[in-house]
Amino acid sequence: MSIQNRISALADIGQFFQYAIDAQNEEAHISSQVENFRAKMKQAEIKNPWFTQQNIRYSLNQWAKILTKENLTAWIKNYKPAENPKKIGIIMAGNLPLVGFHDLISVLLSGHHALVKTSSKDEELMSGVLDFLKNSNDALNASFTKVERLKEQRAVIATGSNNTARYFEYYFQGIPAIIRKNRTGVAVLTGEESAEDLHGLAKDIFLYFGLGCRNVTHLYLSENFETDRLFEAFYDWNEVIHHHKYANNYEYNRAIYLLSKETFLDNNFVMLKESSDLHCPIGVVHFSRYENLSLLKQQLNDKQEEIQCIVSNEPNVFPNSIKFGETQHPNLTDYADGVDVMKFLEAI
Image: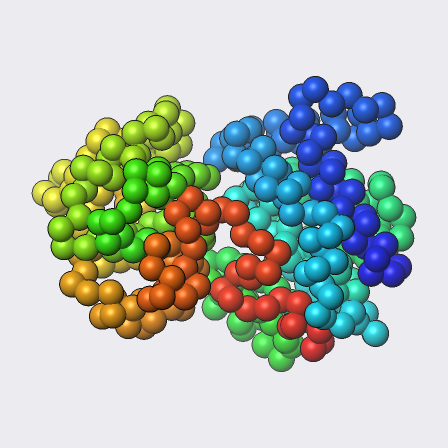
């Protein structure tokens, strides 16, 4: 199957995602597929309550915008497709809806064959995607296989926690591998940010309940930054406390802090806690103060293995920083951990 045909097939699924989230769409030739996928969306939330319909639809909408023939063609034009396709194992994460989809389309557009090991946390949605690809294009169907256990792979892309990464590194030693560990997002605030910036920051923090590696979990605040401004910006997300799993985590962590007499700020749905840790529990955002941006830049460089993205209005200091509110809008070229997956696959 030619790369152009694969591009067309993936552009079709972008359109399919749009149909799936458009309640008014009743196109006859895809109605059964749409209804089946909508059922998968509902089942996904039943099996994994973190996958609310709102968050699933948000993810699908982002993919629908990205998966166009123009975007896909521009993305792969600088890469050479495989002359001798190999079997590439993909072990997907399940912290966000369709979080492993980028790895799948990377393998498909590289010309290789994908061996797909889905996460139990995202089984329904990914199975729905694979079913669509299988039923919509016979040639593309021969380019991937859903598996329970990887075998005969010539290379692997595996995403998991720091603990599972050690297992992956041992199990897949001897073959080319991309093995991802825990990472997170941080934000640098100087005090010059607008109210719009801070509302964007709230989105970076609360979208997907903060479970993504691109969600902001640590704030670097200038010495004079007033934390009241944060709580004002966060208020629009107060409904998050009505989600039972989020509320349970928030109440548990709040009780721990109170029992241990730790200092924290609270607005009844999220806590701000001063800490040097980049990662934080659900319902908590860590913050620390910095003296100057140059010193902070060096500190973040030293922690780059833990950081997925930096949010700031200081591109001259942090050249690859992301604008406020944009962390969950990655482009096709925004590779996890900064590792170019297409270059990796090109060399297999």
